[in-house]
Length: 375
Image 1 (cartoon, rainbow, N blue to C red):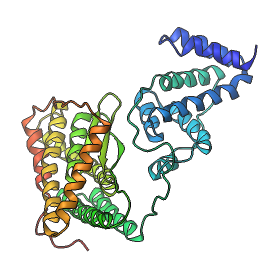
Image 2: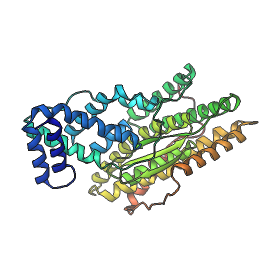
Image 3: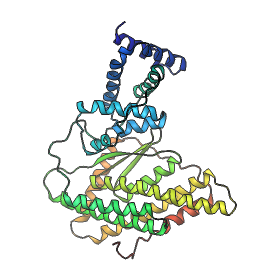
Image 4: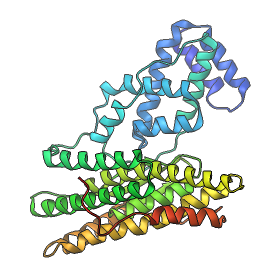
């Protein structure tokens, strides 16, 4: 029997049904034929290539595998992506960065049957991935400008502020630092918008995907939407696949990625502290408290970040307002092209008054006006 025949028979037995019996049958065929390993790996790379054609990116595959399977499968899919990467040029900086974050360690090999079972479980998942909206072209764009030194310095300052916000044990300081980071982000975005409006060539919005992980993913998606709105972006949440697609111009997309990640860390820290106070008062920790806390935090911090951004925008005069208005239209048009049909969703489980009050208070402590400059 050829190795190709072995893999075909294993796939026929295991990939098109959901029972453990068919999975065991396919794994037994592969375990009994060590010569089929190379062909099995080649087929895995084909599944990865198909995922790229369906709009997926490296981080997306790792995220969905983490969501549905376990660490062994994450290592398997990472190895497949890295093996396939030399034959698929990175279409953009985000793609290249995602490859750089992959764990290159191979999955631990136990017995052949267990290994084959894990591979088939992974391939089952990859085979059934739906097509999603592409956020980066499959071919590298020609003539992409290299980042300027000023961009790198600004992003370094923003990252430093957010790192301090995450590290401090004082909520007021954390939120003041986050507000300062939002000011810098807005200023950077305005500078980039004016520069692009004066330069020849087409300046167009793009998109990126940001993972929204359980638990309380609906509240986290609301927080991401609030951060996106404050940075002149739009977010569309895919609850079944666990990510939001954020549409906007490049500097604003970077701002959303940085600030959302940091605020999520800070919100979790503030929630943990609030829960400790609740428990000290004799109340048990509840799911509704946490859901309500995060929902209130997202709602209030969104308003305050938007105030910071608006304050920066209104300080500028002259050609800025038409430029920003044109960018808003371009983002809305790009969103409509990517997602011609969207629906709104309700945030359920927000019924804990104490959780809501504590979450709103955590967001209200941000000093968004009249602060002395951060050294």
